[in-house]
Length: 164
Image (cartoon, rainbow, N blue to C red):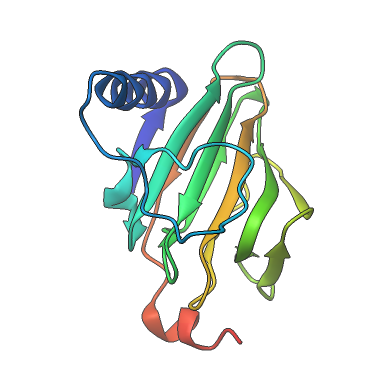
């Protein structure tokens, strides 16, 4: 498991955004006609915690930080937990494509444009794209005291392969 502070996560996101603005990393190669609200972003600096390729586009960093996360088909993040001493958690707003969200011990839930998920602090979960679809969600970080993320094991190909 890897523990990462929220400030480290924001710094990494800012670094990627700065590199993109300076002509660094290219934007995601989304298919023509993909109807996302925000630009897909550049390669996610946290891809080491993903199976497949994802892209990150910071939207706002003040108040309630918001990030546009785009997943290529079949991409998903590892199981992880958002920790907090007080407050915290995460909100996902599905804005394009088709994806999945699953909490440990519960069935996976399909996500489509317009769906929203609140993830309470301390809940082990994962989210990502369907096998045959790009997927984009806005990730909102609920303000927290002592907030961090613990990255756990990958979602196995066997687990993921059981999804429709």
